[in-house]
Length: 243
Image (cartoon, rainbow, N blue to C red; front, side):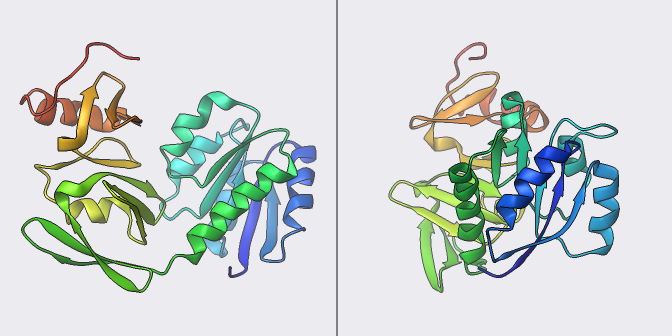
């Protein structure tokens, strides 16, 4: 993995010190700054190359969630927090991982393995679209995927994981762009991180939907359009109420 410039954003000095000790154990991480609030970190990001950010959530002036939402071209982000209740919101923002304090070395290593996995993927693009299939370039080869075989697609920053009936395919394209290349009568956006094939949906409620045994969130921004254009047109069976 290439060397990544990283920063730590946390209002607790001891938390910064702990993460910094872990970062120093990884030769491919280059710590270029530590900040105790989002505003200072934002000023640094605007004028410096930052590839990875360790970001606290509960901070003065601006929360880590609001800070990440404000960034147009955010680096890879690993949330570091003592509060588990923000996990769903965090992953809806396509973060790499969500680490709960106190952070142990094994858990930190797992997060770094995810970063390495993302960095190791060869940039790939949608190459060709036909009537009922799409060609995706992934890992130096072209993969033909029939629309009917795609169950759902999960976005992670500038990458997506395409879950099909037989395999998972990872390709370096963001979820917005791949959605533009798929037929919207079949594929629906349900959150910032998910795109689903409506023909594979088992049930829908006010908060989520089920494909196989996988629960997929129904985000606030996409809920009204999804319910009005897919559910109310009787394309999908529903269950009443939330979880």
